[in-house]
Image (cartoon, rainbow, N blue to C red):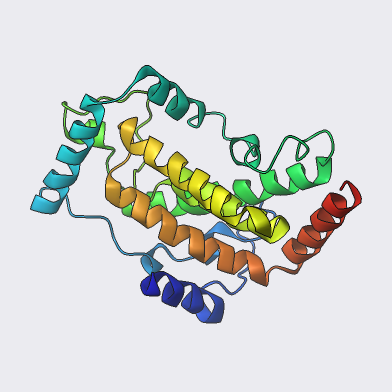
Length: 230
């Protein structure tokens, strides 16, 4: 945990300073402004540690219920704010809070773009491409990089943003983000270390968001919308 806070502090002080727009559309942070090297690199292919991670995935896939698989598949695609906001309560919905939900979708768009930049940098193969014993339990599995886990990073970013809006739901939101993260290993699309890397990336992204004046303005507007609907 101390390492995570040191990473976030470094991001705030140096690495996540705004850079010139490279032409890619983004809302709050330029995906290329967060260096992938600020998170620990993935475990090396062919290492004992990597083989152990593969065995962990295989063991996880041997014991699961249909309900667990269905729950994991629901968080695979599409990734919508409702996957987390339901833990806040039924009144926290898109109909009552249209701006807040648009805000959350803009945040996660930047998050996935930032993670994709890191994936392209590390080019780490998915578990099911490394070992035939690992099953890809998702429709149309892709071959994009595994490290870091985008679902892990972005569900955690959403949780941290939502905590700023509804602080009393902190524990439930973080628990739900962790649950979504664990789904990725059951589905065979990520190594355990990908999940760790995703959490590290989430802290960097949250740190970068906090520096964006546009983000801060939209956060304040979302807070006002929530307050006006209570």
